[in-house]
Image (cartoon, rainbow, N blue to C red; front, top):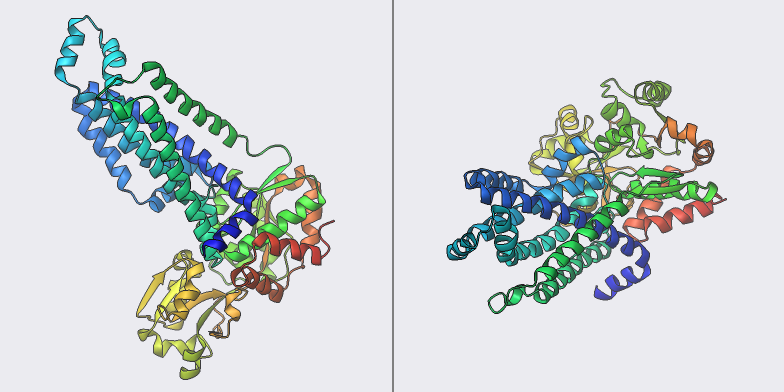
Length: 515
């Protein structure tokens, strides 16, 4: 396994290097902001002790909010991308800095304070010349611990379309690639350890490790803080220079298929135009979060499915058939300034699957056949399936399925859970690569509950007007992917462990779309 991880990193070095830089930038900006705000709050409450308990309590409560929940809160305010991740990381990083700044400033030996007052120090001189230098070791220790924690926690950034090594972890989970998952995890751990070692070295150099024997040099102390500030500001400027002229922002859903489709579209665009494409892979929540983001201009295009758009975006409860596609497209253009371009050629609808041996033993062929057995079965699906308008609740009501239990889990884990017997029934897509495994039996939707889910591209109309060449390239993709071809590409990634980029490039070459 270690050899496989080493090979993965070596073969995709530029990919991991880019993710590492993103990870450092996101973490660094959060650390700088949290340090500055934490210092100011800590100093303020040390000078006004009556506010200390309320302020620390508020910061402490924010610290206890689960990271995924906090990201969900901020997505509705700041949208998808680095900004949301940085805000969430900053909130988590505040507590140790505020608490240690307050503690360091209020626990100074009173005799030192009295001596400074006797020498005629003003309150400002007292703070800058006496209190902060004496409290600095305690504050720096908090910053050091906070940096390590922030780097580790920054792995969640990928759930909101931000960069960083969490992209590798999330992609590894989604595509059932343990080597990729472990590679991202190990690199985050190494990065956190390296930064902790580096800050420890700085701590020793400026004398905080020898506080008892000598007081740290004021010049070295502020030089260290200044360098950290410059690094953070530099990272902020670098992160803010992401999209330039001739650059498109694309999103993909958190599925293997989403990754592949995004790579196919991006590859075709870059090979046939002078446009560049930045892909934000695996946006958590799929359509529910991507649609608001594309309306705000965070994204310019993304792969979508007609049935999902009808029910999740338009929230139309009437049955959708592909004969209503023109109506769907017209409503998108009139209501959102978006249009559908390049219907790719395949339908990827939902179905249910069970283990083949169980299906044979119980004569299971359709969804309705499950109803008498459901009370003894455990159902599993990815998180958003339980919230979709065409998801778990309406499905079970129409078919009378009363499962013993229903488990939320990542799509990359459901097949393994089925094979291990941890779940008995799972929701799958008809183009899932692993659904072709002989150990799996897919069932027939005999009441035709699920509508058509034709895959296509949702694009901002203003971007098509700005770049006419974009529309011409997208039109070349229309009808190019069959359901069988999509399933084969998913299988290549999920089972054969090929990368989405490699699979996408092979497809484009085969179809003659690279020129």
